[in-house]
Image 1 (cartoon, one colour):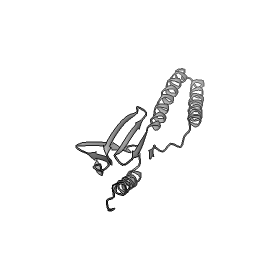
Image 2: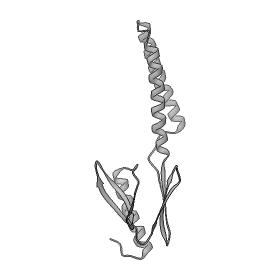
Image 3: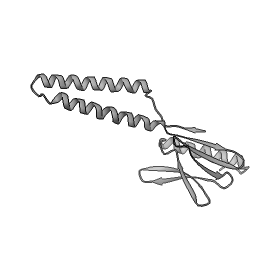
Image 4: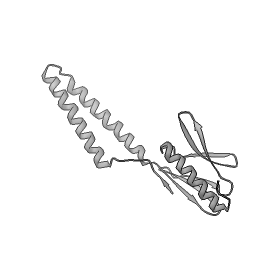
Length: 146
């Protein structure tokens, strides 16, 4: 199972958005400079660069994902990018949906270790994922469903 954040903007769309916003800011700065404020274009360039960097960083945060693999012996969570892997025995792993501040946290727990998964998902998606994982683990381990 692959967990990925929702992203509707492609890399090409991001570039177009940055260009359109920069052109609008620079046109406004040109109009203001024509009216006498000679520093407006300089501030517009700084603002456009900062905006482009901020949007790029936010867009790159959408690259993260988690891969969950379940087999007879283990449930493994691989976090990408970074390739961090965490493995739990499939028979002993528990799926917990706990309140944590302003949002619920989806945790996998076994033998005193906990791992939060799906932090980038919406509340409803985390709840659906917890139910799906509980059903898969129960089916896999031959336990009755709750």
